[in-house]
Amino acid sequence: MFKKILMALATTTLVASPIISSQAQAQGYGPPHRQEQTRTVVKQKENGRTVVKQKTVVRKHVRANRYAASNHRWAKGQRFDRRQATNYRVINNYRGYRLNAPPRGYQWVQSGNDAVLIAITSGLIGAVIGGVIR
Image (cartoon, rainbow, N blue to C red):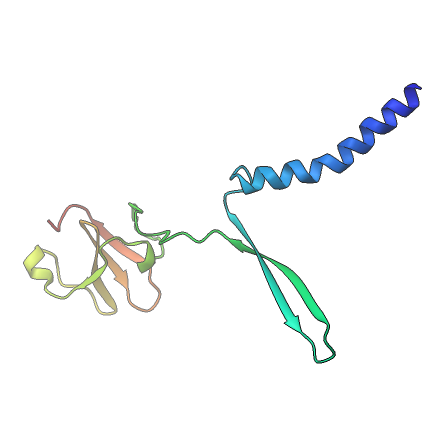
């Protein structure tokens, strides 16, 4: 009698666990970086048969712009990535911001309110001056 009860509990657990986990994911308790969509395709064959295919597509969660709100702190020697720079633009009138002329092969760029001196070919940062641009 005890073996029958244990077998019934084990069977119920095996059957119920996928149902409970799929309901939890459907309610938003699953992993936040995945998005599942089920697509049903119905086709009519020439011989009169109807073929129904269900396809589940799993997509990673796509953020709007992962660099948009980053307040990156630049440091000398780092590699500059313009996607991480907020309000990025090349500064051509460096004298208007009281900056020295960039050496050959370098340029001043804006990242937020900071002026960053970067090497054009390698992207290495030569200097960072904070709060120059208002």
